[in-house]
Each structure stands twice: as structure tokens, then as C-alpha cells.
Amino acid sequence: MTATDAIIEFASADHALPKQVRADTVRLLADTLAGGAAGAQSAEARKVRAAIGAFGSDPEARLLCGGEVPAVSAAFFNGFAIHCLEWDAVHEGAVVHALSVVTAAVMAQSDDNGGMDPEYVLRALAVGVDIASGLGIAATGPMSFFRPATAGVIGAALAAARLTDIPPEKYADVMGLAYSSASGTMQAHVEASIALPLQIANAARAAITAVRLVECGLDGPHDALEGPFGYAKLFEPLDLSRYTSDLGKVWRISEVAIKPFPSGRASHGALGELEQLYREGVRLPDIAKVELFAPPLIERLVGRPYKADMTAAYARLCLPILAPLMLRDGIIDPALFDSDALHAAELVELTPNVCVTLDGNPDGNAMAPQRLVLTTKAGETIERTISANLGSIANPMSAEQSAAKYALCRKLAGSEIDQRIFDDPLSYFANSL
Image (cartoon, rainbow, N blue to C red; front, side):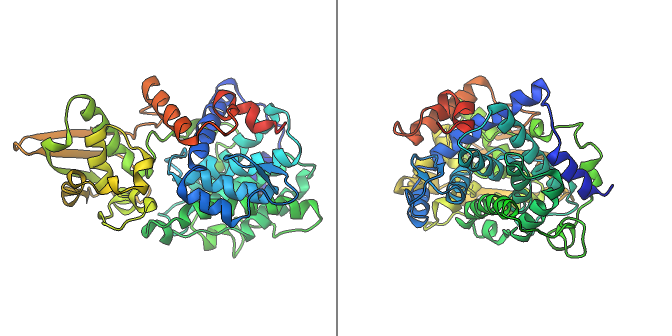
């Protein structure tokens, strides 16, 4: 059996989620919907909603901001909303926002069916996250394509297929058509472009489209991962045994980290320590310099310089502005990113002295360890070692931190949305009635 065959067999199998895996799936679903509901009300999401002609004819599926549109448009919008604030969960070892594409696609497919048994939908979500994460785990080099989208579309399409009558022997067609639509480049991250969440949106829409095409009788290439022009040849090199050796034994959704702050995950090692220092009484006016010694992925993703004309998408990926925000407020509030308040003089003063320095780590996918060094205006040094990012399995958020994130998401989402998103997320996700 090839690795591709093993993944397809896993995708179509009749799984029973272990108790802890089910609990982790529900927990991460709740986090994803909360962040998506907040993102759905952002200025950027309102533009996307206008672009897709929200509240159009023949509604089939729900938007996280309220209202209904055709399922493919719902998958597109909700995928964008989930990722646009950079608040969505991530499998750090895979470097994949594993729930973003999969949640948007599975919800749209469930809605298109008129709602489904919550347990069946949960199993589909866990399977899709597993496969999206697994392709990232199998990667043997740093990203050039945007892995959350390219791996995400394959996991999402196979997850959505589980909610249809597509027989197991057709799952190779689903994977092949999803692969044929895979796209997303790291150039969007280099430029901190809003194209990043649009790549998530495209992947969610492509996943639903692949399923519908197979339902209508179309086929796709069957060697999508390992073929001469497959994923492992064109997108990035893979050692699929790194994933398939534990396939079905280790559920990857239980390895996924929750993001405490609405900013690039690569900023969270530093921000988690700065939040703690704020709690200990360290404040922005006290600090002359912030230096983060970190692996190359951290420098690449959030080491970009402050710009006076930066967009909200850029600010979310800019440690030089995120660090002073945390030292001033003890929180990262995404509402500030679209206002002049982001450029307050006391924040901007520190930005030239916030830097990320490469620490010599040869691993192009590593997020830790890191070392944070603050120099005070009095000449004192504060140093912290970061062995794991806040929100990871090794460094989980406290109950207080989790409640604070949830409360801020609810505030940003507003009172007009379906409150089941926050009060009963599984019911909201699986049942459109």
C-alpha cells in the first residue's frame, strides 16, 4: 500500500474518536468559530462579503456574520473570516493552520445537507485536520507555497467528502481534484498581504467544489501526492512516512495549539513573555530595547520593520509594533489595527529598537526555542527563555487567558450574530436549523 493509499483509506474509514480526541476537537472547534465570528466583523471581511454578493440567491449555507449564501461562497467567506485576524489555531510542528480551511468547508457541506449528526461532523473535522497537519509534518523543508492552504485544501476536501454519499473508491478523485485546485504562495506572507486569508478562503471553496464535481461524476488524478507532478514534486518535498507511520494511532488534532493573540503565531513566544512581564509590572515607558533571539522562521514571519502606512494585515505580522502594544496595554486588541491609535507616539518610539536576531537554529520550520532580552532605560537587563509558545500543548493558556480571548472575540463579533457560536458551538456547527 502506498502512502497515498493509506491516507485515502484513513479518510474514508468509519472512525470512533477517543474520548480525549473528541474533547480536543470540540475545544478547538469552539475556538475556531469564536475567532471566525470576530473576524467576520472586521473591515476586511466586510469588503469580502460585498465582493461575493452576500445574501445572494439560492442560499444553502450560513455566514459567520449572519445570513446565508450558496455553500461554495459560505466556505470562501468563512475561511477568510477564520484566518483574517491571525487568531486561528495552528499545528506548530506542521506549520499549518489546520482547522481554518477544514472548518469552513465542513460547515458549508453540513449546511448544504440541511445539518447533520454532530458526532459525524466532529469525526469529519478531526479527520480533515489530521490530514492537513500530516502533510505539514511530512514536509522536509521550509515553505515556499502557503502550506495552510495547499495542505488544507486536501484535508478539507476529504473531510467534506465524508459528509456525502461519495463511496471510498472515489476518494482518490476528491483528493486529485482538490490538489488540482491547490494554490497559495508565501509571497503573500513576505508582503503581509491580505491575500493570506484569501488563500485560506480559496482553499475552502476549492474543497467544496472538488466534492461537488465528484458527486456529479467527474474524476481527478489519482497520484496527487506522490506522482511525477504531484504535491511532493511541485509544492514541497515530502517524506510521507513521517505522517503515515502513526496514521490512525496519533490524532493530530490533539497536537494543535490555540493562539492567544490576534497576530502571527511566530510573534507569540515573545508576546506571551511580554504579557507575563506586564502582569509583573513592566511597562512600555521603562523599556529601551527588545531583542528576540529566534529560529529563522520567526525572523522570516514577524521580523518585518514598522511602517507608518502599514495595513492591518501587516501590523498583525510585525513584532516591532506588537511588542510595544503588549508592553503598553497588556493585550493585543485587533480593533486598534485599523485606527490611528496604532501609531501613537509612545508605541512608535520603541519600534526601531525591537528586533529579531537569528540564533543559528538550522531547522527552517522550528518555532522554538527562543530567547527574549529586554533592556530597560535604567540599563538593566531582563531575560526570558522561551521553550514553547503560549497556547501550545507544552505551554497551555491559563483559564483566565482563555476566558479573556473568548470575551474579546464575543465583543468583536457583536450581539447580532447567532449566539450559539459562543454558547453551544457544536450545535451551531452541525445543525443549520
